[in-house]
Image (cartoon, rainbow, N blue to C red; front, side, top):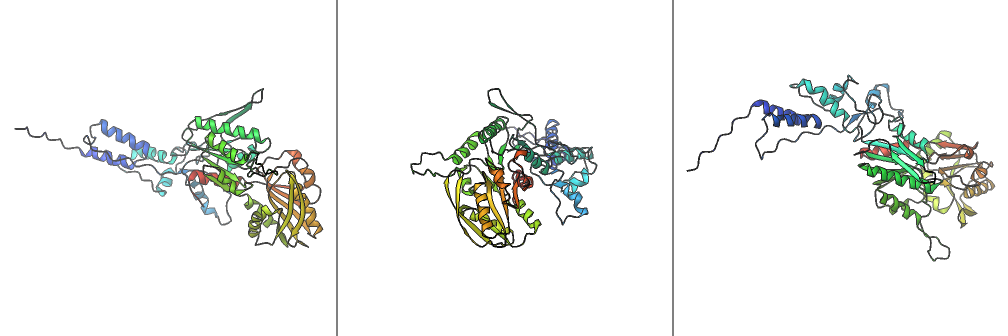
Length: 451
């Protein structure tokens, strides 16, 4: 006859209370309480799973750096200081690089956490501050923003928009033989890394530097690497145009996209790429954003009369039409040109009426300035009262500065997607910053949100 089963002693109420409390705490504190329950003998029977500790809320107190809107009031200043974040930013005390917010640094953390739904069981008041500190600091170190050497001013402006005093530290240098060296100067393990690099002149050096930055972040165990290219070099080499039809040229835009993907990039952010269909060359997600918002706002503030938007060629009609729609559905004109060779074009005709009007020529980039300069002269011959040139990317190669400053334009309005040295600046030039456009996109990519 089998012996009777041994009876299991009843569990104390304190063990069950400890386990219930562990389930209500943020992850780090809950794990400690969960571990103490096992070591104290109040663990559940073998084969019975303990309750999973609840994860803390994925938010942190950050200092908002967005420019205030006109609808903001003084009463909303306090709420702006706390912004939802899946990862990233700075602490409420202004610390850089995502320093954790501690209860000692802010006496209002308890009320702040309770307003966001965090609960602290009154039965264990000694752990309240630790629980609040853990929940506020969760994920605050996850965003890293690094800059290449092509446009550090824009990168730092983007970092300030995101609430950081500057970009995260990175070392760039060249050896005596011209080889490039890159080293990340802080831990990026498990972080969302954003690399800001315009691949402007010298394009090859800037591209290779970007590839080294991607590789360095990958080898440092970054969770995700996003390349932010305010200007995407080689974007015009997006089709085969060999005049003798033998197709013996490289499709460079596709090759560059393959290189970035092979180096380890997870996502690409592009600003006003030459041909939007080139985004299809990438086998990874691409966010294509536009710099037209800051350009349109500038022209609206000038309150120009009798405005007509001019496309410099047939390929730019879609861009000019969208620009005209943002300017109150302004009329559209088109310059008909023929490109005889690289960087050489000839203006043939004008479609549309510009007589007595303010003409705004809209393009994605100005390289040597030949097309837009010839177009401005034709517009003046057709009776345009004044001519403005508007573009996102100011490449300004060769005789561009001489042509643009010759008096054909009232103003030449560009963005800071490409750094312009002092020798490429002139009296009619107006440079607008796209830091807010890029910064908002980075925030939304990091926060996994959308408009």
